[in-house]
Image 1 (cartoon, rainbow, N blue to C red):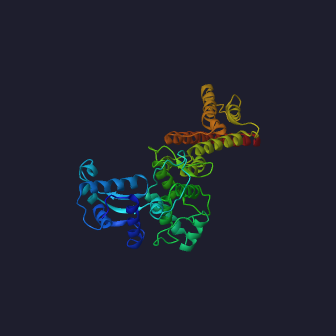
Image 2 (image 1 turned 90 degrees about the vertical axis):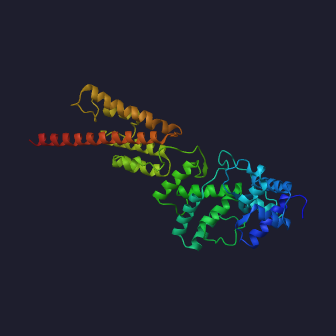
Image 3 (image 1 turned 60 degrees about the horizontal axis):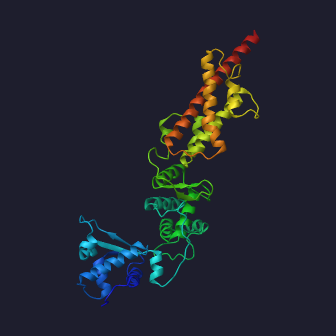
Amino acid sequence: MADRWENVDILQAIDRRQQETYGGGPLSGVTGLSLMEQINGSVVSEHQRWRGFVQELHICRDLGLLTFRVQADPRPNLADADPHWYLQTISDFALTVEGQDRARGRMVVQPLPDPGEDDGRKISNLILRDIGAAITERYAPDEVAEFLAEEGIPPPELELADDIGAGDAHAILAALWRWGSEGRRTVRRFIGRWLDDRLLSGPDAELRAWLIEQLAREGWRVRESDAALVVCEPVRGIPVSAPFLRASRLDPLIEQEARPQFLINKPEQGVFASMKAIEIRVRKLAGFGDEIIGVDLMNKAFGTAGPLTDVSASKGEQDGTRALFAGAYAVLRNPAGHRQVDYDDLSEAAEAVQTASLLMRILNRVEDRLVSAGRAAARGGAG
């Protein structure tokens, strides 16, 4: 019987039981009390030894060496108030990769994560499971292994449990995520590139939208520069998948520009593409060359005697239409052409796209008017 507990002894005991009896998985059904008595070799009756064992378990957990499940108990500070009962409420002990290294006398040094990219927050198992399921559905098991290997997954240093097959994408990604900073970095790079369609295959549009929405709610986004998954402020409010695209009947030309960008969580590009479509349509209808651009294009197209001006409308309506197109372009399109524009409130991006849709509908009426005027002119000339 030991006089005092050593956390390395606890880790080694858990490691042995995980490998020998539980196939590398958690010690299912083993409580803290039974674990303590197994390590001790007999019943432990001393209050201070109960408290000491709890303290060592907490140290291992806080160092990221050990995980365990705590059953709900209404009493506050149970670990201090009644350590014997507390030990009966904790179970399912499992070592992390760092815990295994400590138990087996290995020292593994990994670079610390950049808190601007990864501050240690979780990615839910639901997300990892759906990613794994999508990959597994697309490929045969040997093809899954090849697909992951092309991204360096799993790395040679990662020892997978015996029950994890080479084609089990979910289990491999989950194990890699728990492997420490380098594992998290590899998973973040893989998920981001997979979502951004930079690999041989990626998710369909619907799954991509759902995953990006869920990741955003957990505080993750795909960085545009390299498609890595990095931390952000958790998104609340309008879902990233932009249901307004379904609820609103956008002009088809605007919808085809905006929808793909919103589905991959790039609303600023959706706004940019929508306003670019407006610019192209105005230039085409007005018959101008490419040298006339931006606000100048809008002012000339809808200005006094401009080719798109409705001469039958009042002077105020004519000037209002010109100002509407020039102002919308200056506010919604120009900034995105010169600097990074981020829409913290996705409803604002949605409203910007709806503004572009309104402008496109006005241009539809302009084209109808121009066509009618051309037909009338043709009839007059024929007489």
